[in-house]
Length: 460
Image 1 (tube, one colour):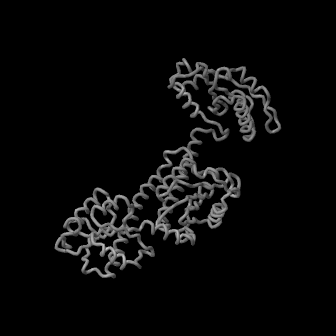
Image 2: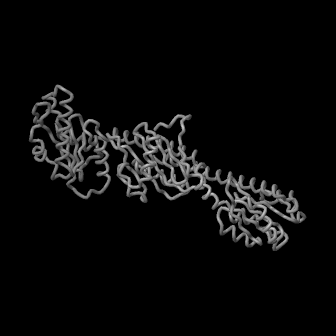
Image 3: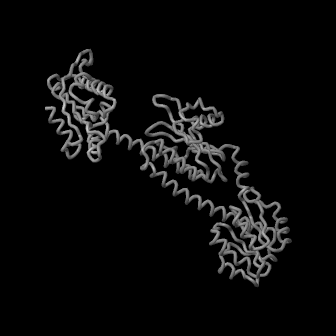
């Protein structure tokens, strides 16, 4: 699939995302104050009454001992900054829990700012060099402006570390998207796999659908859905009962651009090997803008993977299907016989038949290619309709190979099937044929090609 040019706006952002984003982020922006002096808590909260980071006011948590701080850190997720006193239950209580926070709790992104009123217990040089902290503040030197600056710097560092971590996870997911098509057999399976990975990338429950153009039509329909949107499966775009969803998909197609907001990512994917598609992913994220580049990479990865599946399907058809007659070819029959030879057969009546029309076409050449191909197609269609429980293949220019039960595959059965003449190009053809039959069970054939050769010899 092709992507839009670099100077073309690729994403369209909904106006309503700002409020939703702010509400979502405020619920996870947490700062923990750890100090055994209640006046310090009250003063700190007072001087930070108007503090905000990127327009969002944090949630403040309070602990009055090192032990209480650890309990809060274990219970609360996503604490961005800890303002940590040194002297509490013991002279070094604050210092002793730093290792626990970093190693036992695994909180490597949380910014630890040591705030002490007794620098003799832990000087700035020794604290920074000996402990895994991110800042050092003397209570006597902290002004309102300095505290605001320290918290802003710490929150910015935490934010950056979170984005880096998300990016690393996303890169792993995107690498999987780029290669996961190799392990699936259909475009639908690949699409569902990508939706699962996209949900992990966006930190949400897998919930999505794929809108595709119907063959030989300008109408779009829902071709793939996750289980929780299965009610929309196979519905035309105009039939989608959810008006907001229907209008969103229509807008995406009309704009030929992806629509991103805090509620969903609706990705327009321009088609190269096949028509345009739209992948709609319901999402719950903290920052709608943070995932834009990753969504673009994922979209391109899905595009490339989808094209590869189409190409692989074409190669498979060319390898195992006869392009003129639309039935399996000789290679398919050989592989099927090989499988039968390698396993214990449930029936000793499984038979391979070759029906050859070589003699007829040699004695009665059909002058026009169109008539010749139409006659072969008519023969194939009649055999397929009369023998639905068999595997019908084309094994030669004018020959068919069939695997089925001996009761269906015998000269009398073929004579009855082919008795009625074929009308082609205003002419009537009553083709003669020769048959070669071999029961697979008990045969001395070494492989599928050997079976076919024995049948073909019997036809001569």
